[in-house]
Every structure is written in C-alpha cells, then in structure tokens.
Image (cartoon, rainbow, N blue to C red):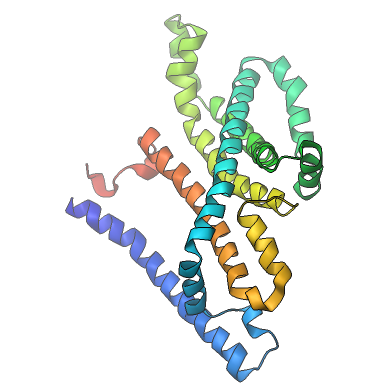
Length: 270
C-alpha cells in the first residue's frame, strides 16, 4: 500500500505543480495585459483565472446540464462507431477479400472534412441528437477499425502455430489468442477517438442545435465581450469532457488488460 501511495504521488505531484504554475502565469499575464499593456478587450484575449472559476461555479447547473447533453450523445455515437469499427476489423482479418473491398472506402470516407460533413448531416437529419450520434460514430469508426486490425495481426506466429497444432477452431483462435492480443491496439484507437467524438458532437451543436455545450459557446461568442467569461467557461467544459473521455478509456484499459507492461508495478512489486 505504501509503495502504491508513493507511486501515485510520484505521478500526480508533478502534474499538480505544472497546473498550479500554469494558472499563476495565466493570472499574471492577464493582469499585465489589462493594467500594464492596456490591451483593448484584454479580458476577451486572456481572462482572469479567478473570474473564470467564479463563473464556473455560478453557472455550474447550466454548464453541467448542457455538457451532459453533449457527452451523452457523443458517448452513444462513440459506442456505435467503436462497435462498427471492431466488427469490420474482425471481418477484414478473417477475409483478405473483405479487406480489399472495404478498406479503401473506409480510408476514402475519412477524406471528407468533418467541418463540411457536419452541416450536411444536420441538414438531412434535422435532429440534433441523431446528428451528434452520427458524426461522433463517424469520427470513431476509422481509428478503432485501423488499430483493431493492426492488433489482430500482431499475434506471434509461434503462438498461432501452436494453436493450429492443437487443431483449435477458428473461434477459439480468436477468443483465446487474437482478441486478447488486439486489446492494446483497440484501446489505442479508442483513446484517440473518444475526445474526437466529443469534438464532433460540439461541432454539430454549432450548426444550430437547441441543447449542448456548443450551443452555449456559440451564444456567448455572439454576445461578445460582455459574455467573455461564460464563453471561456464553455471552452473549459468542452476540454474537460474530452479529457474525461480519454481518462475513462485509459481506466477501462487498465482494468481489462492489466498485463500490459506499462501497467505492471516497477521494481518487481506485486
């Protein structure tokens, strides 16, 4: 227990020091811009940290409600996109023909700029929730599929030959060998896609949705300097949602595949 406590302290103490230092520098630069350089609209460019914190607490109910709407739809789209990506990766690993038929189209689909696709989807569907789900799933699909396929093919050949020597069924090869070997690749794709799914959902909200953190962001940007702190608060909440989604995937990865080298205790500890 003492070793784990020291490990946690060693990991998080430098991070806390960096965050505290960044906030102090931010506050000082904001004061300089406003009181020394007399920069026009200084608080719009770099607002005071203490005022931002006060705004976050003052409007915490609204920010949490709208953030939950964004995160919920992004999560649904993320799960659907991840499931589709995993399924396609498995099918491509089973059949070279399927890979040759589908992979070029999967790559081509990513050539469409998401900034142009989001208003098209929203204009067709005319439903903000479904649009957010579609865009989040679209963003999630490719990185999960690509990394999952790479993981499925990273199996050690000697282990694969051993399974075949025991006349293992194809499903047994996948469940006992290929799928466990693909977990690191899968979670690499999930950690890449999770924050992007949140970003995609926010982008759809900027197209004219009624609810979500992107709606509050656009509204306060429209009102200009008088709503600077609320605008910056929505940016902070959006960034927090992206980091939370990444952290959640990292936590699930640690629970599902604790055997990975980076999760093992250092120094031979148990």
